[in-house]
Image (cartoon, rainbow, N blue to C red; front, side, top):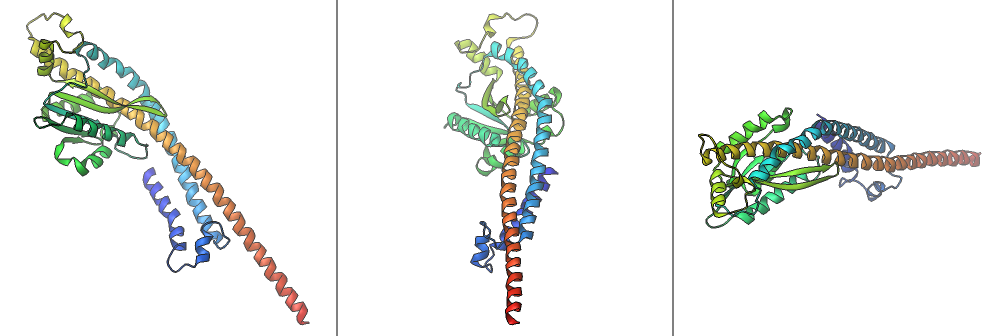
Length: 321
């Protein structure tokens, strides 16, 4: 709702400018847009009203983003404890060379949040270039409307799955685990690379890549002495084989990493939106100050012109007598 109102007020703001810059307008009127006294006070008042409305909307959106950020930030910090034990156990080797890679790109469904979406898309494309090859296959899983719109332009054939409106309801582990299960069922992979924005502060976020290996690759790396963390230091007891345990661990690891990544990305989105709306509010205030000065000058010029005309008319009548 707020974004639609913002677009409507933006169109109202641009309408007087288009009228003044029409082909039928004189050069004096074109100069009037830059501060010459030919602008009518009604045009300036309309622009001031539009800017004030936009400023109110951006301030409200900043407050809403701040409220949502406080609600999600604590959960994101607590969720970091879910995936860290898996990193210690199975390791995190983003440079591992595999034949089938899947890049999971996390973005937002809405805009007006700075460059967080373009950043994860750039990192995803860089991962594609690094892992693509003659005998290698790289696929994308897109989460979020903004990354979907960007990636569909040039990578449509490489996208296996798209998910939107994930943040429509409050995020919880059950919801994200269902998403992770859908991804595991619909794609074949040797390595899953989750690209997201890790939250640091309201004004800082870091593009991050988390790697989840398939059970087969984990077992293979374990046999050849690859970098896998502390897995080999544990003994397996019970009736389950090592392959079954690795399968369960890989699925649980992916759901935990996805849960943390989604929350971190949501925090980064709200922080970036707060910064963007704060900058927009300040810019609207500066524009309003300039328009107020232009309005006062135009109004004063109009009053001065009317006084000159009255005095000139009175002098002409007096001279006629």
